[in-house]
Image (cartoon, rainbow, N blue to C red; front, top):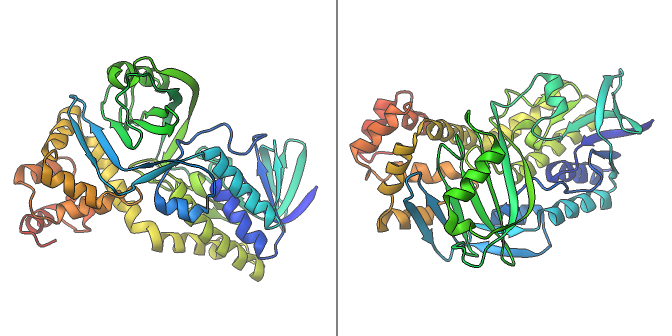
Length: 414
């Protein structure tokens, strides 16, 4: 049996970032990764924001800077814009994961691959983790083991929902309308119930595509096939290179810590509820998690009361934004195809396209919505639609009563 101060379960970006910070503070850290190769199988599009790029310290190839979006409504209307602003960059996600793992090892952390944790037991002064071919005893465990986290289940802490995804990497056909610097998003309850479809350029004539299934509907793979058939102008003559997939956890559990255990990244559903991206939030959470771990190690106190400081720091930085995003998620789930098409057409004019281009932010989507609501330029029909869909306006601007919020917004007071 090996002994360490902290065992990190999962060698994804969040887990490796936390491991690096703790090891750099002089503590012994062991990372247990269930797969044999870091970053594989690929379960991410590799599309990240400029903030995330800086935060990760990624030094690899930047395949593309993306300067615009096309949002395709269920009825086929397209709301699009393109500017000089960089909204996202496409990176080699496998290379990014491996770089972060290398940084953790350089700081002193030990990495063991092919080590899936199948059992744990509390042993007085620590937790014993039983993985394939090895056993590790740690004073503290950081569970960064994904959306279907074994540790989250043991603690009875689960996200509000889990969105299954079907995705693929393709080689675009010679006649595809896809652009090298534009993100294509597709709405439709039939092929992406409760989520959306996407096409992200991946460089050298390739793209990453996918759909999510957030409501009851066909299987994710069938939904992906439906997307390909629905938009032949993008996918005609495309060559399938490989299927990918995974799932996205939405809505953090009420807490993501317990005695001697902290959940991190997808295991704690530290994911943007609108886009499903988790890298930006996960890397920030790793910083808070590592600080709390170091404090617990120095104090030799691994109680839930001490580890609660991790969640308190997280909530202070991201709690309000995440709650707003979850309200937008409720709104999105309330939209049928007719209402989604109405909203897409409503914003398809020069003023709103420029407004959206200015304030769109993939890390903070609710910021754009608050800016839109604050203009005082939306007609009463729009507000009534929003109220009919659950009174989300009142909640997103933190008002107690949505009708009071309606009056204030129409008067331009927000």
